[in-house]
Length: 106
Image 1 (tube, rainbow, N blue to C red):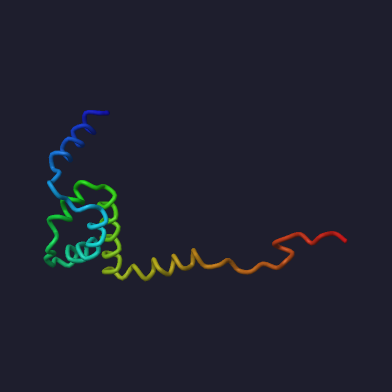
Image 2 (cartoon, rainbow, N blue to C red):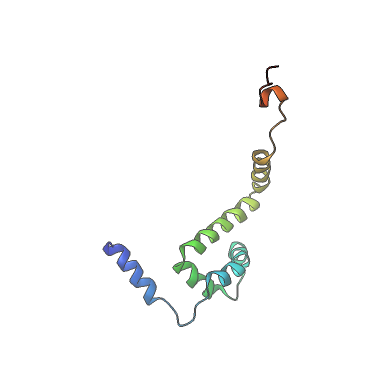
């Protein structure tokens, strides 16, 4: 273990509270928290969510993803992402029987 990793680990332990919200609790509030932050509105559970985000890289990554989507939506770019996604998941055009499987010889 490198000194940097050890130092970060000790910092996280020192910042641990007696009772902390878990990932499930934070994920339940994360969309509302992200929306409030994006619009500059107050959020009553902000302190608890921020403490967890500082400790949990998985939830922090999820929060960053939600922020990205909110920005895309605000910039009217979200619709184009959805359309591109639909194109990627659309079924390929049907092929004729001869293109997909050889015709057995008589």
